[in-house]
Image (cartoon, rainbow, N blue to C red; front, side):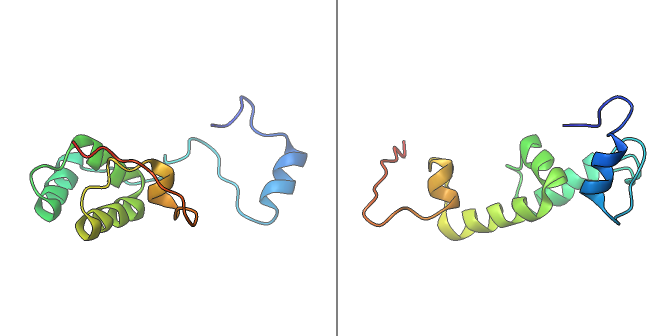
Length: 102
């Protein structure tokens, strides 16, 4: 979404953030540098050589979600063929889905 040119209007900012600290500048600018090569090596050591750059980017942006996904794959097997909704929330009682595995 980003920050509008000139920042957010002060009355709106005050209502949204209340007493929380407000930062100036680009979000993430204060983060330390990330060594992508070392991160990829660590992921490959943990999850195997089939780890992709997409896996790396997923882990960089959402490490807890990625770890949970990998745990689910380990526990349930390949879930990539499931529709997103069926993966995230349980089906309704009596609801069925069709999944083509090959």
